[in-house]
Length: 115
Image 1 (cartoon, rainbow, N blue to C red):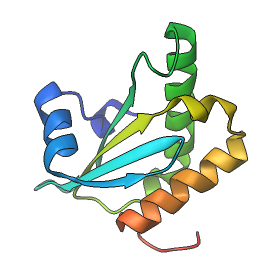
Image 2 (cartoon, rainbow, N blue to C red; image 1 turned 135 degrees about the vertical axis):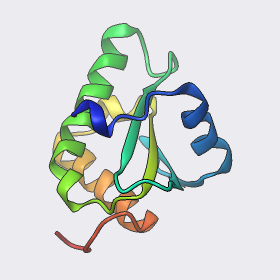
Image 3 (cartoon, one colour; image 1 turned 180 degrees about the vertical axis):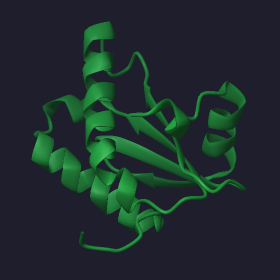
């Protein structure tokens, strides 16, 4: 994922988690918060509860890979925090793609549904 799409400041990520709308799945949690910018910013988070460093990095790589496909389809003007959960590691790639698509559609950040 390009650097310009990353939400890097800890305060901004905490604001999304604290003030934003939350959408939950057993494998992933999505937090959204409108921003005043003309672009979307995304933070991908995997805590130690997901596993060791190898498992956490794998989870984040899988999420970023899927998000790369969705970036052109996302509405600008949102900060997103995507938090990996341990069951994400057992999900197939296609299944994880569907999960993220469904969460993004429910959150209203997709430009069009069923793309």
